[in-house]
Amino acid sequence: MSTMYQQMDLDQNPIVALRGLRKHASGELQDYFDAFEDLYERKLWHQLTLKIEEFFSLPSSGQFQIPLFQNFISDWENKMNKLKLVTLGLTASKQFNDNNEALGFLTTLVERVSKPETQDVYVLAVMETAFKKLLLGDLEGTKRAIDESQKILDTFDSVETVIYASFYRVSADFHKAKGEYAGYYKNALLYLACIQLEDVPIKERIDRAYDLALCALLGDTIYNFGELLMHPILDSLSGTEHEWLRALLLAFNAGDYGRFEALQPYFAKQSLFTENFGHLLEKIRLMSLIEAVFRRSADNRTIPFTSIAAETRMRIDEVEVLIMKALCLKLIRGTIDQVDELVVVTWVQPRVLDTNQIDGMRRRLEDWDENVKRTARLVENETPELFVQ
Image (cartoon, rainbow, N blue to C red; front, side, top):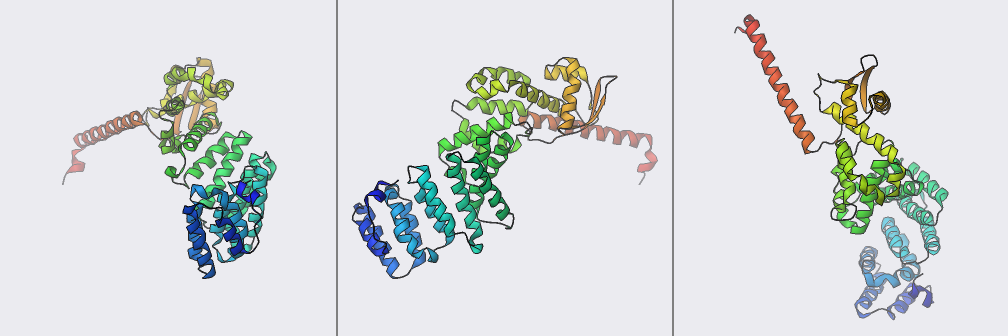
């Protein structure tokens, strides 16, 4: 707990509490305490809230935040915007060195906003309290908080972005603790959609990008990396020891088995990759199959098993099982001709394209355009009467 809070035995009178804190403040902070007292006595609650927020943003204010919140802000909190109240409380809670003490502090904060008219802000307090429970290993308590918050959020058309950000961040961390790759991937991307990336410390950005890349590759239902590949969070890995992960994601997205093999020496850096190598191998082969289909024009998607075996580095007797897996995962649609060992693909899952794939699509469109023109000329030459003006 804050050293200042342990040393001081503050009177419950808010002005006395302020003056007691002021005695321990440095010169740059004493002016704030004078302003707090003046605004409080003049009942200028909005201006006072803004001044408190400014004070809490100062690194040197840390030791004063808990006693100020409990002995001063609590006196007039009913005059304060409840989102600001919770936000200040969350800032103060970071001053606790013990997670159990922080949990107790946040639990009282939850109680202060547990009213029908403040249900949106209640979610923010509940989710941040759940995060402390998660740090303490209380997965069941965290899950209950997530479920309760989800039900409340479903009743709103919209809430403040900071509330959604808290919900998705804690939900992502919960799935990470449970080792649920797809759950983490989904919620972490939703969290990133709710924040400004530049507001996130660089270390947190690197950790988040690393975890997202890991989950994208290991998730057994994730075969479309588009949203992640387009997000600037991946730039955080550039120049770090994890830069190879971005290259691996790009290899999977392109179905590039050769690049996958070239990056395999890096797998020793992450035990999950060595433990799940079989899954990664199947996944890169599925992505190679998708890429092989995508490179073909729409009228040329009857593919021999031998071609797929060459693309995916598999034995020909293993190809049919791979195709069936792709059909089950709805990565492609089509039919299998077991006798002639062919697959006829009618649809392939959309995905984000890299520059080489875009160039390939451009060439196919040019070929299609030329075919249309050639057909038009043929029809015109064979049936000129149709074109008589």
